[in-house]
Length: 433
Image (cartoon, rainbow, N blue to C red):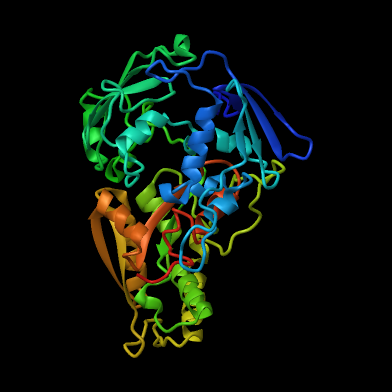
């Protein structure tokens, strides 16, 4: 519906214009004339009604379904009874299309300063109903339509500037210009070929060999040698690299919620963020003293963050470690005169990380920090897809994590931790497996 221009400003895309009610609760979008899907079929407001309700439906199990929470009706759609059944299985979002499909009216539950940002996020993009339902007639695999099809056999129909014409899983993808895109005359690149790899080294080597025009990642070992290279650019991101603690992990067995929180805070204080940024990241990252990143705006356009939870600087690290030890002692752990955890109260856990790449280097740095105070941290390295599945399922004690903001509002960082969020990897509010 919306997109961003070169200046990162919200601008209409499939929409021609929009109006907002004085109370901020009703948006009416007028769509552009002549919109088409990549297969030539008409795209109109009814496609948004279908797509948004589908994404918000708990049965779709979308990781980002919670992003529709601001729209009236979402609470009723997702309400469960004590047995885990939907209370209102026929509930719908308050999203309606005009009879001619030209306008889309959306009623919100509460004023949402970032609603147009949501309308520019992929979860709010329309999907082609016929292809979605043909690929999953039994309703058991909602994502089937996007797993194998390409535009060659019209299984993968889209509304964007390019269509997928070839896909070799875990290896490459080819996209070609969509002639039915409403701004096709502005699309100058006719074809894009992408290399897919979980390993930063392979694309980097391919770039250096002249086989790639662009590479979006650099192996850690190569960063120092690229300083001053005009082809090397560090692009700022609004987000946080962090560690996820599984609240259902055996490491918290028998603890009160307060003591478990104290332990997590103590372990966080043992991590030398400045060392990681300086010696592992090496790309001007900023040590994080809070989960909400600097630069995140509040609803009035001002910076949200005004203080850290603690001082992450190198100068404060020794004091942080001392504080962490005191916190662990306050909940029953014992340390000797050298600041090492006593054998009387041992602590061991496993840190889950995906391979290969710099994430393992970060894990090793954290392992050394834990070892410095006598805590046993083992590292479990997994291939990307297995890692994602285990982290989402809660099959871990501690896991590496990170979040780049989908829109510039602190809620995007915080709403992940609602019990029903598809991104709630820490398992808050979820039963033990």
